[in-house]
Image (cartoon, rainbow, N blue to C red; front, side, top):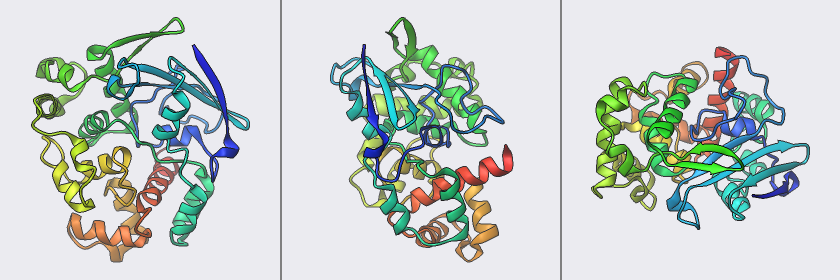
Length: 306
C-alpha cells in the first residue's frame, strides 16, 4: 500500500473534499460508512472517500484504488499506486486557483452566499465514459439515487479490485456495459434509462464515437457532438463537458439553475436552451461560469431540499 499527505496550503483557495465529491457533479466516488449523499448529513468532518481509477487511465493498465480524507491541514491518501497524488490533483482539480476563479466571477449576492457556505469546493474531472453514463441516468433523479445506480453498475459489471483487504469495483468499461442486456440494466434500477445506457455503451465499445472526441472542439460544437449519444440532450452534454472534459464555461440548465434564473436572473430566460445557456454563462462571468453554476446548484439544493 502507498500512502501520504498533501498539505492543503498547496491548494490555492483551499479545499473542501466533501463539498467537491458530494455536490452532485460526480457519482464515481463513495464513502465506506454508507453515508454518501445521506439526507441531513452534517457537512465537514474527516470521512474517507474512495474511487477506482479505470485501467485506461492507470499506469499499470489495471484499475487502481484511490482513498483520501481531509484531516486538519492536509489531504491524507492511501492507494494501490504511488502515482495517487498526481491522479488526485487531476481528478479533484487541486491545481485550480480558486481564489483567482472566484475573483474572476461577478459580484452577485447569490454567488457570494454560495462561495461563503461552500468555499473550497472544486470541480471534478471524472473519466468521461463514467460521467456520460452517470448523467444519462440522472434524468428526474435525486443525487442519492443516481449514485446508487452507478454503484450497482460497478458491482454487477465492473472489474473487482482488492486493496488493503477490502474489495472494490471499478466502473464498467464500454465493453462490459455493452455486453449487459437491457433486462440486466433494468435490474440495476435504471428503468427507462436502461436502453439508453445499453446503446451508448455499444456506440463507444464499437468505436462509433467516444465522449473524449468532444474535448478539442469549440464549446457549443462539443455540446452538439455529445448529443449523438442515445439519451443525451443539451443538459446532459453540458454536465459531461463541465465535469469530465475541462469545459469550465459550461452551465448545465438543471432544475436548480432554472430556479436561480427564475428567481434571480429572469432576463437570462430566452425561451430555449441555447440562448438561455449563453445568457446565464455571461451572467456568471463566462470563462469560469461552470464553477459558479456548481456552487449555486449545491447551495440551492442543500438549502431547500435538505
